[in-house]
Image (cartoon, rainbow, N blue to C red; front, side, top):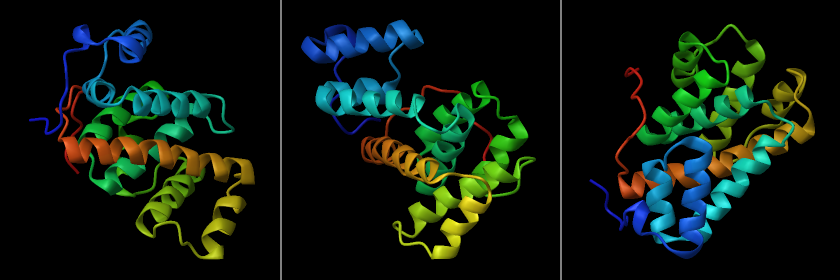
Length: 180
């Protein structure tokens, strides 16, 4: 049960109504997390959407962004975002086996994605204080400095929604993946 106020999407006015209309047009519905964020702060929802739009233009592929978001969501224990990014990861081309491996911190068939997921988990679990060797490992896997910075942007975006959903206890409205 949600802990924060969440007005029905149909009752929204102003900027929240405009954002909800755009989300509905793009996705067919307003996910519970966006509805609750926008009900409380259209500013916060606008910022989240703009961060995600920026990530769509970043140096990272959709598959890489979803790998980061899934790994971070699992590390942060956000069941809502794990469900959402498990689905989005599948749409970005990750297999069910890859999705499960990313969540577990196991190897996938793509060593480069494994390094990226490990880097993202390392940044989250160490509060960003990583050894120089960790950065060298990501660079040696072929990631550019721009991609490393964009990885931090992806972590910033997903960390906000992880925090929001953990505080709010947002009801999951995506298919729930198998437990690990």
